[in-house]
Amino acid sequence: MRVIVLALLVAASSACRYYCKTLSDETYCCDGGKDYNPPEYHDGNCPKVRSFCPRIEGGSRRPDVCPHDGACQPYEKCCFDTCLDHHTCKLADEPSSTATPTLTTPTTKPPYVIANFARNKVNRGG
Image (cartoon, rainbow, N blue to C red; front, side, top):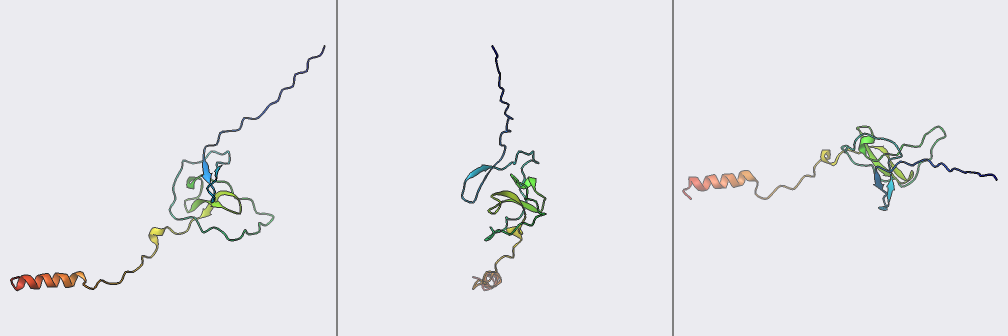
């Protein structure tokens, strides 16, 4: 009598540490199975979503997955890319705080006019 033992070895997959959302609000594992720096927030904004997918040349490599800004260079943001279907490091747009503020139209009674009116009223004994 022969006994045959088959062993099936399955590599244990590491648990996902970071989850991200697609533009359609679907959740997916976005750590790529790597260890990353602690989560960080970098200044700036993600660039606008592309309206077309550029052609990748033969020598180009696919950008790495990133779970948060801390996996990117300080001048980059971790943003979802619709062409790649995952988050990747992208050059950050300027932070909105450095944008030129919009100018408001002057008020009809600037502060100095109100101050002069009050001073004149006091001088007249009012």
